[in-house]
Image (cartoon, rainbow, N blue to C red; front, side, top):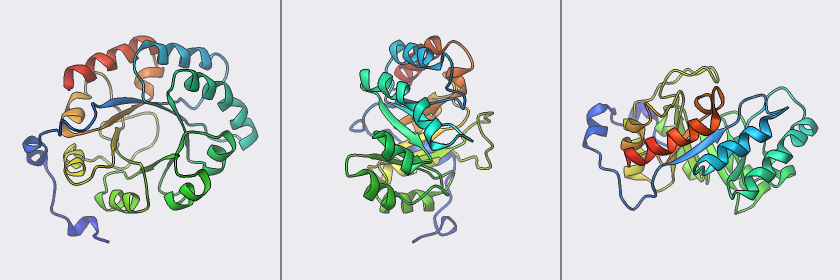
Amino acid sequence: MIDDDDLPPLGPEFAAQFKRDDKRPPCQLYLISPLDVAGGFADRLARALDAGPVAAFQFRVKDVDQHQAARLAEPLQRICADREVAFVVNDSISLAKRLGADGVHLGQGDGDPREARTTLGPAAQIGVTCHDSRHLAMEAGEAGADYVAFGAFYPTTTKATHHRPDPAILSWWTTVFEIPCVAIGGVTPGNCAPLVAAGADFIAVSSAVWDGDEAAAVRAFDAALNAAR
């Protein structure tokens, strides 16, 4: 497998020359949950999903056992199912299996996409975090991932980040591969346009929606994505 150091460097000029393939579907919104999904969060999720088009919702909680995670997930999963929004579990193949989730998103230390495919079946959507690495993205694609995620593109308070890719990595990926790519990290309605133009198939967001009025935020993202297409 080719390492990142063996690949030609990417820079802004690469993205500047890129023209988004009209055959690819328009960029869509991918919501990621806050860590606290208890209390009234189910109502907030319903309001968000009713406010505008959302392709997927990722259930992301930390420091709870699988039984508690499953209890927290079940009402949110029903809300997504009622609205035909894909329900994706973060990190845990076993929890995704237990819930019958639509998919799982794996960090670099969360398991192999091949294992996820064997466990969850051919219809599961399997995503892999690839940071700023073309090498990791190509590995994920070879392992059967359904999408790869690059980021963080902007400063974010949602989680600690140590990678800051150039949007040109999205242009490179969509030029070479058909597998969708997700742009994540500090994305807002005000800064998402360059990522859409660079080739992102999905924009993954969390705090930009949940730190304020979730319905207004989804509407703002819908307007921004439409304007950037």
